[in-house]
Length: 263
Image (cartoon, rainbow, N blue to C red):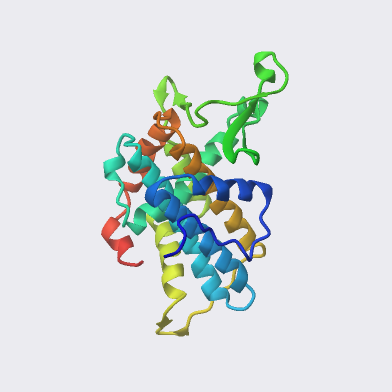
């Protein structure tokens, strides 16, 4: 039988933050760990084939992204966050929706002016394989940086009410010239589906932008960092709970059956 903690990385020259994440994954329990290991395995395979078999390399990197999403969902379910029972671990909709949701949330944080003073960053300690968030202490009168513990234990409010990124979802669709969020989801679902099969117009081919695989690799490792920051802390972290409400609100407008049938 294969060893439980093997994470194939032989085709990757790992950066320090990737090394920390890979080692941190090995210490996590259950399906979350194995989905995260699988994500790294698919990145590793994609990296090997990206110049000789681009269709399969894209398929593998997209699968890696779904596996990273599965790891995050497993952590949320394992720790029994609010609305964890609404997550369908087998739904391609939920997995495909996570990355755009996190990008939407990221767009919000990038526009909050006072956060620029705090300079929040995800950081990595190689000596003990820790993934955490650090912030500048200057806004509160002390030099240096401080670490929120747990790392995602903060909330976002607007007019004293919990904020669910409704404006950012709308802007995301407008910027991409997308009438509905499911249009974006269908495009991504079809891309993966069409990599494997012939169509009425012939055999599908794919072209990707320069540095596509590098950008995807960094994004997936970021997803794995989020997984670790959730899974390592038994305490329910405020932003994770808030994000669950916002995420469920976003996907409630997407036609689940139609999207899942495409994948």
